[in-house]
View 1 (cartoon, helix red, strand yellow):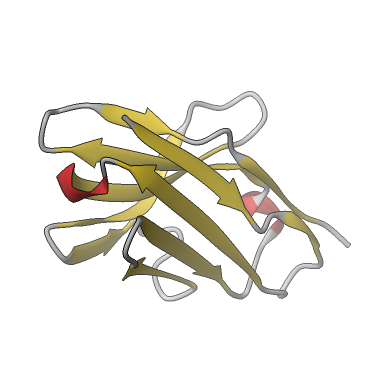
View 2 (view 1 turned 30 degrees about the vertical axis):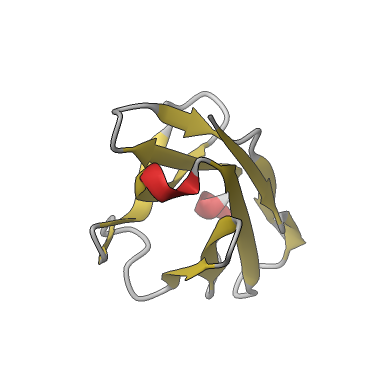
Amino acid sequence: QVRVVESGGGLVQPGGSLRLSCTASGIIFSINVMGWYRQAPGKERELVGGITNGIINYVDSVRGRFTISRDNAKNMVCLYLQMNSLKPEDTAVYYCRVGTTANSVYWGQGTQVTVSS
């Protein structure tokens, strides 16, 4: 079992920055995939970017503006999403997704990001 918790969302003006954090605890040795997704009102959940076997990928709409990083601690794994040059279209609920070697998938509860003047 893996517990996933996101934090760091909020209201920011266009052009501003936010840093989201995702903390995964539990059977962390089995984690092999971590990623950020987002879901805007009325739209399907979409991939923002993630880390798989140490390789980081981003969708085109955020590449160059968003940066994903990962930090391993003794009892938890943290995934970060640094978001710069935010646009109104980045407004969404952002979710952290964790995959394990047992092909289990865990989601956090999500954190709201609103980009508005």
